[in-house]
Image 1 (tube, rainbow over the protein chains, first blue to last red):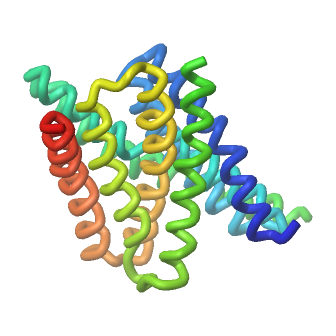
Image 2 (cartoon, helix red, strand yellow):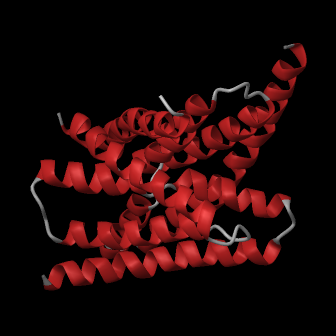
Length: 129
Length: 118
């Protein structure tokens, strides 16, 4: 199979699990579920991106499927905004401020952590190989 | 069942996102994350609209949670934002951050208002 097509299949295949897992989290925790998916996804995507930069070896379909497919579908920007809208409509403005700004800040912090860990681990494994 | 429905929708959303990102890599300036911004803002507008329509649970799970949830992405945006900080492109960083978060808020309201009119 050509690699471009393989990447598309891989993205679709892994996206199923990312979307399903996010739906599961929002079913049990509601908006906190979206928050948990988004923030943990930032760590995971940064980890995978920087890990595979160091340690790739032709695993393009796997890297693309896991990052663009699984984590991309696991996290969501649209639900984040919709959750904010729902909270604003319920007129309780303090939690919505916390939700909104902590998503911005923790998204970046966890992405930075993921980058750090992914870089380290990728370099270590690439060094040993 | 709702979870499986959302997963199936996410397949379509993610594949469309991947296609737009690939198109953007070839045809749009690399200096700014146009593709992700376009994806996130358009998906947010559509989710606001869909939500306002009060669709049956399974239709919403497929289109809203699945397709649009899988289409938009919070993680890619943050990794791109982090990349701009790493490159010390502070203007790009703030432009991207504000365009995403302020644009997202405006568009989810716009979509919701339009959906209520329909």
